[in-house]
Image (cartoon, rainbow, N blue to C red; front, side, top):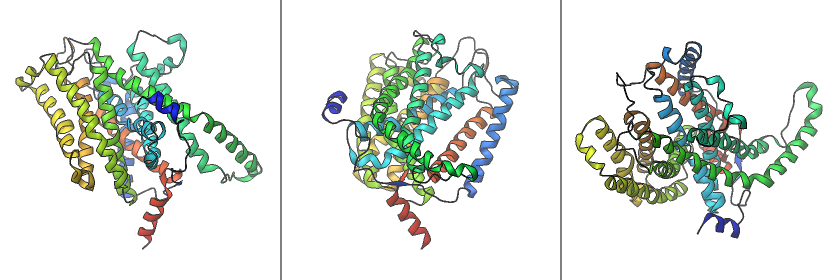
Length: 425
């Protein structure tokens, strides 16, 4: 059944009786682990400021021949792929009306929102003229023949869509609880009325943004692969293919549910929740199908192009390709085909983590390992500053996630109150 026929028979379900009431987690923000993340974030921020002051050459190992590296391969390309859980769960719960999955849509939405926000920040650090990052917003600078422009404008639009989709969570947090300080207290009633009006207006059009988010995600996930189509002589044959856009899209879709599983289980451990295994196991049951489609097309393309022979070179690229395929695709595919693995906390987590790690490995292979610019005199390896900024961005993202779930209704009331009761005993 097509998406269009599904929508026509059942309008997109934005608010329904199947979605449990969500509440703020409300745990202490600072822990020993959080202080470690704060330290890593500050170190990364320091290197980023040094880069802005003294240029890319002062912090990175990038050269005129090697124009991109870790920040594009990991911070941008991988970040976009790992944020796919937002649009895959939105499509599953709202468009295909699998109501039992509504419980995971808010955490997935928050992960996607923060992921894309930090993709934009990572791109800002990587751009030589970072102060022109706003140019794609203005039609005067649009270039319809540029794949990079298509990626940029879709990310801008999708990031906007994600923030609109997050607005109902913000309204839910403040409606009925407006408490302005001091002289502004007289405006409490008006502010609450305005929030209710805005909430009603957003509710009426939210279904449009949900569909738009799915469409935009498919566009820029595939277009990231299209970027490399103009480099047939620079990209290793193990990864270069006219099917790169399709392979990027399929790998992102296949990673969407595993990323939700990993995020849910890590959050459950951090906040002392019980992971909702009945939901996560069902997601994992769909994953081998999506991963299998990617695997068949990937291997079939390699055979069709006679590119498998490059594996027999057993050079760095060949070993990296084998690691990506076996650790990131074949082994987790086999594991998740087992019902006992899907029902196991440990098995489900590590199988899902391998897929997440595998797609990150794939993006690093395409943009770094397998990419060989002409006239490159030295093999590229990221500098300490590049690692520091990337680790700092990831640490800051985790801190923002913790702040958001502490202050906004993201997780269902039932699991939050159950965790609070267990802690208080």
